[in-house]
Amino acid sequence: MAQYLEFEGISKSFPGVKALDDISFKSKGGKVLALLGENGAGKSTLLKIMSGDLRADTGAISLNGEKLNLISPQQAIKAGISVIYQERQLIPTMSVMENIFAGALPKKAGFVKRAQLKAETQAIIDKFGIPISPEVPVMFLSIAHQQMVEIMKAYRRNSKVIAFDEPTAPLTDVEIKILFDLIKQLKEEGKIIIYVSHRIKEIFEITDDIVVLKDGKYVAKLVTAETDERALISAMVGRDIGDTYANLIRNDSIGEVLLEANNVTTYAVSDISFTLHRGEVLGFAGLVGSGRTEVMRAIFGADAIISGEIRLEGRQMSFKTPKDAIDAGIALCPEDRKEQGLVLFRSIEDNVCMPVLGKLRRWPFLNTKACEALTVKAVKKYDIKTPTVDKLVVELSGGNQQKVILGRWTSELIDTKILILDEPTKGIDVKTKAEIYQTVCDLAKQGIGVIFISSELTEVINVADTIVVMHNGSIAGTVKRADATEENVLAMAMLEQMEVKV
Ligand SMILES: Nc1ncnc2c1ncn2[C@@H]1O[C@H](COP(=O)(O)OP(=O)(O)OP(=O)(O)O)[C@@H](O)[C@H]1O
Ligand SMILES: [Mg+2]
Image (cartoon, rainbow, N blue to C red):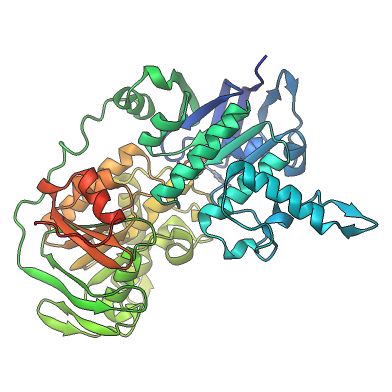
């Protein structure tokens, strides 16, 4: 009989929120079960309970009918459960083999048997067909390969249950395919797989069943093959949100040239030329690592320009630091919310108001009422799930943290001519994605030039007026929305330079 994992009446509260409310469902071996729900629905909390990082207030988890005692991460591993989080949990300076066998190194008289360790690791690597060496320190591997090492570690532990929390967010399309092949192998071996992602396309590609959560409550269990995107979204959101792209109210009066990049070359990108007009949404597509973020760093004064020039409203600019760029009216909403964006141990309010404190001062004091009002607006606009604006950002769910950054850079007090959004929808649920697209169009209507970088082809070709496609540090082509299809943009992003009619 196939194995099964059963959740029975799981509840978990944090101050002011019931993150999980009486969750019960079953997940079978040899199947991939998607856990789906809006930002803050409780998905990561459920995974953290499975991994022994959090304790449920009530309820139980059992494996093949046997109740598990998940009081610590060690207990969860012993019980056969591995959870792969977005933040890697490897020791960076240690080799692949030491990481895969951490806690179970083959030893003799206190010494590690390296030859055996290497051979056993190689056998696992060969099984999954991953092109890495057992002896290389994991810090030298790509994010994707580090993730593979974690999966192999879970496999080595003989885990019966492997859960993934938004595993594809940092991966390129090619790497996603490798991950999916690996998941399929695990599935064939009868593992119980739980998969969390906001990318609906993936859900249909890789999963068999779907459990939908909403505000910590169980909504439904669906069979993937018997449902469609629209039904799924309406189960998640609680209503039909219609066709997101068709419903967008766009800016139809694009103005004069605002920003020009002429043959810009930096250490990371070469010969970049494009123009951004007032009121225009300029999309940047390309694979992860194609140089999109680096182009923005150059514009923003974060990376030195070796040759070429940037013109803002016709004037040549030479930003030495991001502060110069901000003073000139350029705002950048960065991709990495933790490293470059948010102050995690400060409140939502502090984070939202940070760049506009000067305007919120009623000399010599800070106008706390105005700060709060500004934050409340952001919370409402993006539907940030929180009991108060004082909540620490570190306590928000991943997607809600991303919304705080957006709230910060799109508030009415930000005086921007150009807004650069680098992967603004990463980890964001479908409903809020639609709100972000509309906000982008609204900002364009106000005359702001918006640069919209995204790895999700569908959104970039449907939201942007013009799409710049990057490949390997250069521009592979530029297309208007009307001419853009997923196929032609992907072809440009993946192939060498080709001629494209605009
Ligand atoms: N350590 C914590 N302290 C306080 N509240 C928390 C904590 N961890 C999670 N929460 C709250 O629990 C709720 C569920 O969060 P969770 O991270 O499980 O959501 P999620 O479904 O994973 O969302 P996302 O799609 O954004 O990742 C949220 O309201 C969140 O703010
Ligand atoms: Mg989460």
